[in-house]
Image (tube, rainbow, N blue to C red; front, side, top):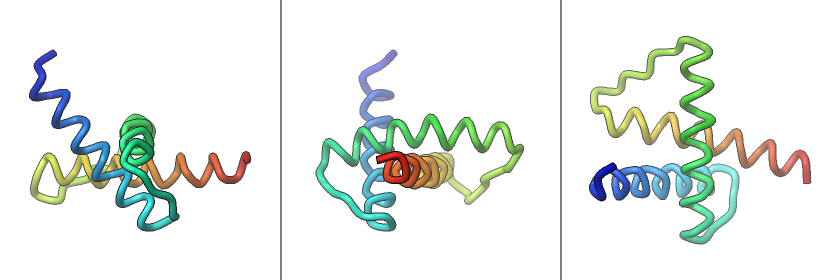
Length: 82
């Protein structure tokens, strides 16, 4: 695992977490990162299971959108359970 890949994952996680918090509320850089990374896993799993093809023209944009959708779902589930 290269350091560049880890930094890209973190950047995607922060952007996805920020998008999710913008839509459903919340804040903080660490919360953005954690929510985005968990959301990336959940969103990727949901997209693969459902067979949806996300193609917005750029691989990184696709990953950010999928991670943000997953992060929104994770935040809503966490709020429902709390």
